[in-house]
Length: 180
Image (spheres, rainbow, N blue to C red):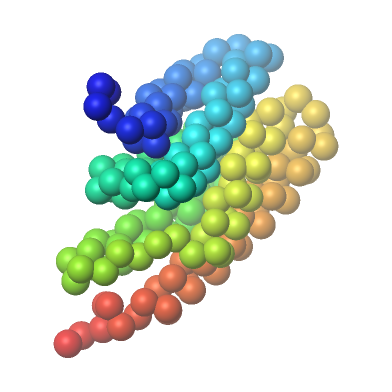
């Protein structure tokens, strides 16, 4: 990673943390999920920090534009899948979250092919924030009922925001996918 700027190193760190977070799901739940929560929160913080730092210091790179969204999707969707496997998140919710990401990624590819860069909108940022708060609560929801309640409420609020922001993103950029 020598020669790579700090924001890109943080993106790589987020990707490296994903397998360790997944591994924590196989550790004893009494402490494994707390380790997973700490790693997830650290990774989620890098998602916020790397983008802001890159923009503030003129360090935005093509690598970062490409890898940052991938790192975010790997992190969130891996945890969603693991929580679904444990019966803590309904499979349909996980499918909807992941389907939205495929649609947005596809739209971004079409836009890139036309020389247009589509930045994340405010609704998508709200969705991400809600997910980043909800998932740690869901990861430890077996420990205390209030964790479960907060986690479920925030997760389904993030699902609503996910679908709303996805629809808004497609609708706002519909000219990019219109037949010519």
